[in-house]
Length: 351
Image (cartoon, rainbow, N blue to C red; front, side, top):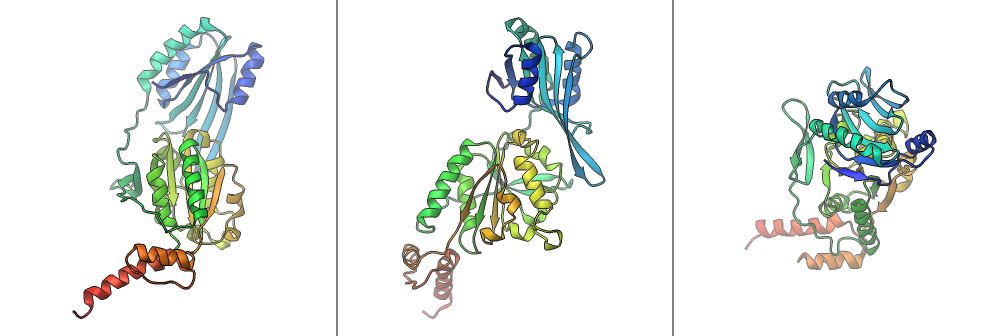
């Protein structure tokens, strides 16, 4: 069981409520595990000495077809000297999960009591199998459930392919994604500038569970409330979605379902628990982006990709063995494709 004592966290409101009740600064024990909801609640109820002294709720309702997914933040006073806070995920489900458990207590006299509860809680830990492959794409299995398929990516060579400005921004972004648990990053620029290639590079460098989501699976994933439960299987993850401009429908305005879903996952009530970084790719300009994405509280950066200068295109062409001199700015795709065209000519030409 993962335990962290007196670690700083975001439960400021909980802390203030308990501080006001105890009239002193409480100590904390944080459990970094997920628990089976029913068994967890049975354990908590068995340790409550009398009627619950105080219980606070913060409830989140997420539309799902004709019903709702219900998540709940609970702050419960077990006795005069011990409080506990936790998240209830998908409360109405029979298999609901408890996460982000934190005990608050007055003094060392309560530690033995808390330890007894912790020991019992170890029996109901939900231990998801760790995925061995760190870079994956999503698909639907035979049971119509989301499944991971390993995505084999060879070493990505970015030399001579991007401007110094882009490389500098990407190096900084990789460091931020490694360090921070959640966030939103956006790649923009016209097609053929190497944005998808750079996504693969980032995924290979961040050492996180990286998941590429195809556009045809947006409704089953990002736009589905159940996707939060899927993401909760991974302690930290990077989700990459390409060609995002196709997900917008002008009929519904700029703030569409996709944008709203992304913002809930990055800025919403459960974002602290999910610890997910989203990387979105748009074949467009920043002016055409949904302004709601740009207003995201956890927006890390918008990286704009440019065409290669004539000098860079010529240098890249030389390194690829094409030796073509470019007089104008050129897309990365056009330089790389010229090598393929040369190979085809060599294969079908007269000898």
